[in-house]
Amino acid sequence: MAMTAEIRDNKLCIEIDLQKPEPSASGKTLVVASTKGNVVTPVVIDGKPVTIGLNAYIKR
Image 1: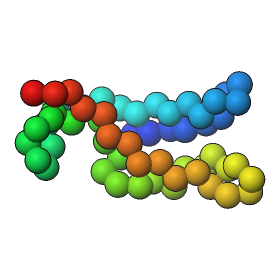
Image 2 (image 1 turned 90 degrees about the horizontal axis):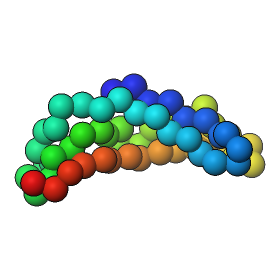
Image 3 (image 1 turned 135 degrees about the horizontal axis):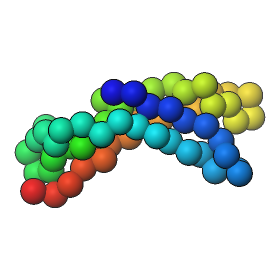
Image 4 (image 1 turned 30 degrees about the horizontal axis):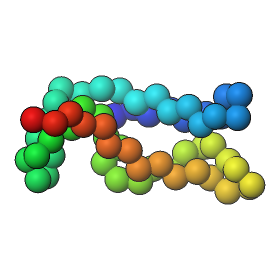
C-alpha cells in the first residue's frame, strides 16, 4: 500500500493505491484501498503530524 498526503490550497489531499477488491473482516464489503490501521504522515498542522486511518470499499 502506497499512500501520500499533502496540503494543497488549504485542503488535505490523500492519494492511495487501489488494490484488487478483497472481502472485509465482516465479509459485508469488498475493500479496494486501506491503510490497514492508522498511519502518521509527514503533514503537520499546528506543529503536530496528521494521522490517517483510511478504508475505501464497495458493497457486495
